[in-house]
Length: 85
Image (cartoon, rainbow, N blue to C red; front, side, top):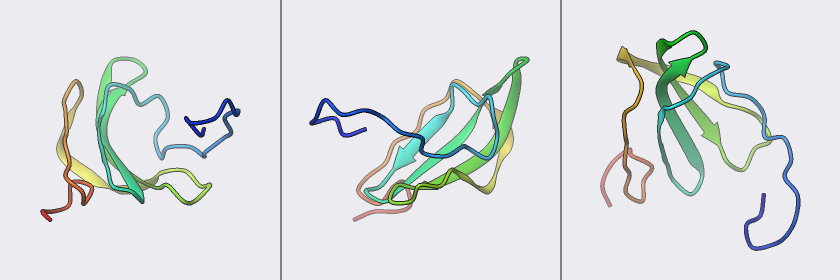
């Protein structure tokens, strides 16, 4: 969805794990990384997803957190949480 217009939204693909909510996320101008979260049935997950913004595809499994977590936060600088300037 383009926020500067009154346009409509469209499908952007799927995450590698369905039902994921209350997860941490960070991004750069080209990628989004989501991690952890709460699945249906109150089960925590340790999955890390990476999404390429310029693609129309969904998330890909990018590894695992050391423990399953939800209700956590993340932050980033200009490099999508992957390092300094």
